[in-house]
Length: 271
Image (cartoon, rainbow, N blue to C red; front, side, top):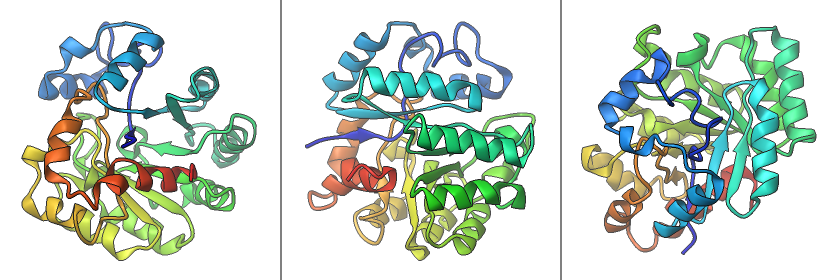
C-alpha cells in the first residue's frame, strides 16, 4: 500500500534552516516538546528519501513558508518527482496583489499543488478578508489550501489563531475550494472533527500527532464519518516516519487506503 506523508522536511540545510543548528524562537518549543533533536541533523536528499521509504512512506509533501522558497520547493519536486510533492508559501507582507501573484507563479510556473498557510506565524487569521483573493485564485486553479488549525507553540502569537472556527468560515465562503485543516484542530476538543465533517470541501490532516494522545472520538471518526477526509502525516521531524506503524494498528483495513494515500492525493489533485 502506498503512503503519502502530508508534511515532511527533507534533512537538508534549507529545509532545516528554521531548526538547525538553532531553532528560531517560533519553533524552539516544538523541538523541546517533541524531543526531536536527534532527527534534526543534516543528511541530504537521497538519504532522506531512503529513511522515508525504509518506513514504508512512498512520497512526502514538502512546503515553503514564503515566496522566497517556492522555487526551491519546485526544484526539489522536479529533481525527485517520485519522492516529493510541493506546497507554496505566500504572505501578505507586501500586499494582497503581491500575495496573489506569488501564488499564480507557484501554480502556473512552478506546478505546486496548493498554498501552505500558518496564521499563527503571520498574525493574520484564516478568515481575514485579505486572504480571500488568494483563496479565490486557488479555487479557480483547483489547488488546495492547507491551514494550520490546532494549538501552537509560538510564544509571540495568541493560541486563538489555531482555533478551527476560523477555517470553518473560510469553508462557508468558498464551498468549492479544497481546504485542509492541518493538525486536526488538536487542542480545541472535538470542534475540528465537527468542522471537517460538516463541509464537503474539507479535509483534515493528522500530521505531527501521535495516535496515543488523541481522544477516542478522533479515531472513531477516522474510521467512520471522516474516512474519506482524514489524512496521515508525520510533520517530520516532529514525528519519525516509523509512527506509520502505530497508525496502521488503529486504522481499519477499509479506511487505510484513504487515510494513508487516497485522501491526500485527492486534496493535492494527484488522482
